[in-house]
Image 1 (tube, rainbow, N blue to C red):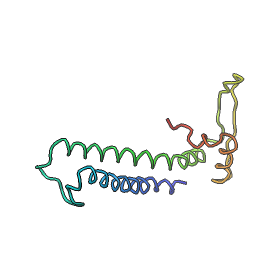
Image 2 (image 1 turned 135 degrees about the vertical axis):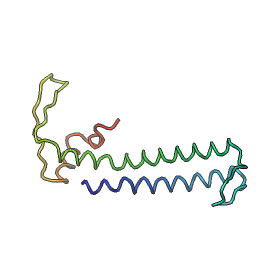
Image 3 (image 1 turned 120 degrees about the vertical axis):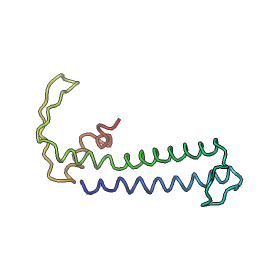
Image 4 (image 1 turned 135 degrees about the horizontal axis):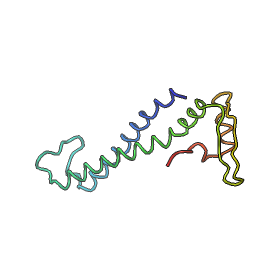
Length: 129
């Protein structure tokens, strides 16, 4: 599972390029094709337009990071579960008891299956705010 986390950067890059392409199409259509694709906007460009473009790139970077994190977070949960100690102490809010749970997984498939069975889809995003 650790090697799969390398995909986070790749997903983020692809998402950013996808958003950047749509942003370029959007800004070109709003500017009545005043700027040709690939043409640099120099010092003669109004500050408001340059600021809008900068904010657009900031939002695209944040959105691509959000997309990549959402896609790869379940892999991080599985990796953490496989690496954690075999005994976990949990507090049951329903009964008020302290429960010692053994968490030993036979492998990745066993871990995925047990998370899905015991916690459902939300279990893969446990700990994500």
